[in-house]
Length: 112
Image (cartoon, rainbow, N blue to C red; front, side):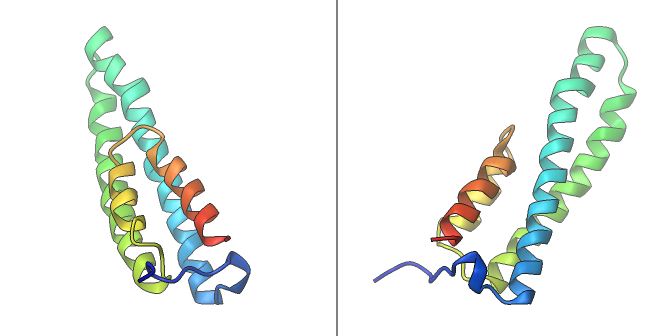
């Protein structure tokens, strides 16, 4: 049997497009906060001894991570995504640039 049915982006309902747009925004925010944490806050802490950025960026990243996972689950229930989408989205949130790559692959898959 085939995987869950996917729809071309142009045939998604208004509610499905809204869920996809929210997922994209949350993914970009979460991915950016992770890059800020790894690229700026952590070097400041371990190279210059300034721990404060890790505290604040880390807190923001944690909240955005939880929001991203919840948004991913919500979007998966609204849009009939391929079976690989949910685990790939979760895995992507643990990798630098992962949410950006996941967003590209998901939209590419849904547009077919």
